[in-house]
Image 1 (tube, protein in one colour):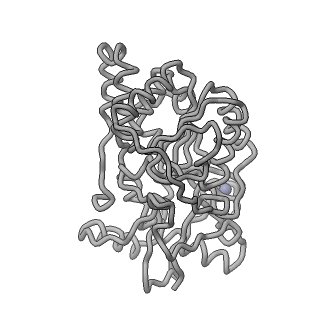
Image 2 (cartoon, rainbow, N blue to C red):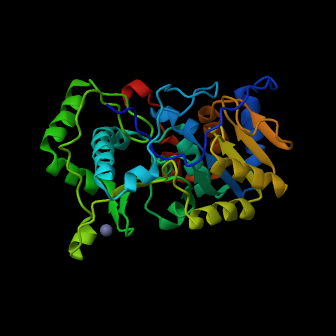
Amino acid sequence: MSRLMRISIPTIRVVPQITPGPPPPTVAEAVERVVAFLAPGNVAVLTGAGVSTDSGIRAYRGVEGRYLNPNFKPMFYNDLIEDSPRGHSFRQRYWARSFIGYPRILATRPNPTHAALATLMRTSHVSQLITQNVDGLHHDALRTKDPELHSRILELHGTLHKVHCRAHHTVLRDEYQMQLALLNPYWAELEESFRRTGNKPRTNPDGDVELEGVSFDDFEVPACPECQREGKVEMVMKPEVVFFGETISQQVKDRSYEVIEQADRLLIIGTTLATYSAFRLAKHALELSRPVLLLNLGPTRADGLPQLEKMVVSSGPVLQEAARQLASSRLSEDANLREVLEGGIVTSIEDV
Ligand SMILES: [Zn+2]
């Protein structure tokens, strides 16, 4: 029986060193600093797993910067896309676990940090948002279909809400989930029974679960429907997230740098910056002499970098109040914006 599978996070993880810092600010002090930092506008924001923990999604690492799951074994990109019986059995295991875990990812809701950032995007204090999260909650928090706003979010490690084949046909994950259920009635029953009884396996941030003593041999992985229409059978299907051993596309990489270059400052929230794709963006901003403010509860890879300003605070209450102050004139006349700001809810990991 194999261990936990995990997706995304393309680079080697570094456990940050713990260095003593200044005492944490009060919420009021942190709000004052964040308001001053955001007030001039054109701020880029970079978020990580810590931003989604209030939505009941487990962070990869605890506040001490260590892995929460000692049995962590990533699934590698090359295994998942291998066009062979071995690759097929990797995909059976991946999709079976992901099939069980996905409904819970779908049930997660934006929290106050997502809501505050969505508000600040609408008021243009935040010009662009880069996230390492694959849960889609920054998009949900916008509470609009306005493509202009959604286009200002860059998902550095992709999204769980889409699936693609090797020809890059994209299928919405909701549709693929239905296909998985139709082809695998036994697994659909199992998933339902987990939901009914509340006896659910541990869900990982990437939407898969740990299942012990289960065989995946009979699990049917649906072929790409678009390839099928073209008369081909394409069985290699992969979620649109960056796996271990997979490189971020040049297009996404270029855009992430552009976001940093076009912004006047960078606010980093809820990330240890342990993955290099995120860390190098912080470094790039500092090299360009952009002010960088980092809010995180634990140590980070960027601690001690000259010119980096860090505050050890929980982002939810601070961002909510900062957004309330910065958007106050618009909030009084715009009921829709008030809905966006109040739209975040805190969910504990046990409730998801
Ligand atoms: Zn295809």
